[in-house]
Length: 40
Image 1 (cartoon, one colour):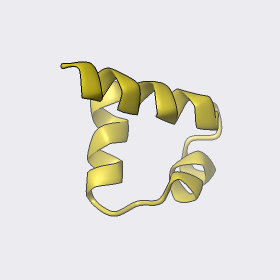
Image 2 (cartoon, rainbow, N blue to C red):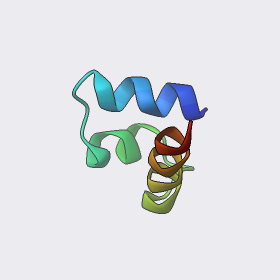
Image 3 (cartoon, rainbow, N blue to C red):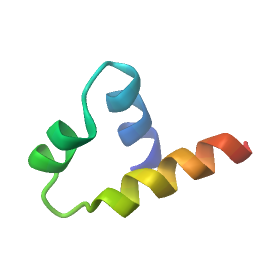
């Protein structure tokens, strides 16, 4: 799921759009993906 979220963000989707499409996610989940990506 991390890869999916990062791909969506890099394609230009906003955090709001992602949260609307993936209702089980929360804003903190997206921030966690970004934090993970910054460490690899």
